[in-house]
Amino acid sequence: EKGGYEHFMLKEIYEQPRAILDTYRGRLLADKGIIRMAGIDQNLEKFLNANRIIIVACGTSWHAGLVAEYIFEDLARIPVEVEYASEFRYRNPVITEKDVLIAISQSGETADTLAAIKLAKEKGAFVFGVCNVVGSSIARETDAGAYTHAGPEIGVASTKAFTTQITVLTLIALKLAHEKGTLSQSKYHEYLAELESVPSKVEKALLSNPIVEEISNIYKDSPNCLYLGRGYNFPVALEGALKLKEISYIHAEGYPAAEMKHGPIALIDEQMPVVVIATRKGHYEKVVSNIQEIKSRKGRIIAIVTEGDVSVRELADHVIEVPETSESLSPLLTTIPLQLLSYHIAVMRGCNVDQPRNLAKSVTVE
Ligand code: F6R
Image 1 (tube, rainbow, N blue to C red):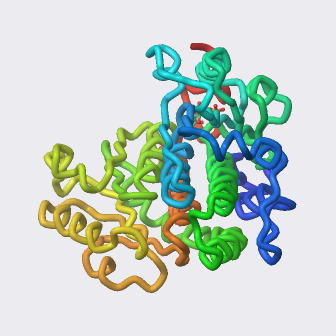
Image 2: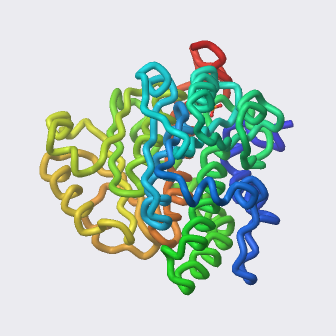
């Protein structure tokens, strides 16, 4: 049932090229320049007339929501707020009929997310679901939605659900950008083609596995780890840290790279591994200077870079390459080595990778 893999998590990491393809199959018609999604097509006016989009989710799904915030604002110019479902529902939020709420949930059963949906519906907002489990409570409770079609995710740590959530949300953002005219025709077509090439690029990113395994062996006994990224890759830093925490029980924190100097830099010494996402498109120079700051404090740098990178290679202790893509799609690639890193470290520490202590696959308690 694990298809020859030692753990479901590893199987699911390796399923991502296929899962992403399944997510956009029949929806992304790149050569025709069309994105077809029933749940969006039938409710297009709701999205186009929305004052703002509120995204609610928990955990990894919340991180996918953060990536979506960058894409929606950047490409479709729609204001977005991303909220932890548990905070949103209890803080007497301002919600109107002009709001669209997107709830993201792999399981479709997360209690806080479900409660946030009910609240938004009461206030008259249009509620859209991005779920993986077909027929789940959230899928049934929402006004419309789009499934991720990632296939069953058994490992408690979410992997393919995350990348397929981002894929669905990217399709929606591109579709809305096209309808609104916030993206030029040529850019739109470029994005469609680029999105279509993501599965084969994820396949390439997976080739980093042996290097990631070597790096894991060096840092497996570290008590702490920092993850840094900027822009689209800031949520990826959060997600990398969450993966390490939940399956290897190493304390890890994700930060926007620029926030480092406002506090966390005090933690850096020769014992501290710092994972930095430093791909070429997206604040590259700024990230390089952050790397210099870490280096001068003797932190150990593990950098995720674009294929063929030279500048970061000179500074970092280790580099892990991912293929080049547009900045907006880069989270789909930079996430891959971080999943593998947490996986290998957890295995080396003898942890129960598929069923980490204290965690459940669906959190139906509030
Ligand atoms: C992380 C993880 C959790 C879930 C969170 C939300 O790997 O699995 O943080 O992402 O419990 O679950 P869903 O997406 O099912 O609502």
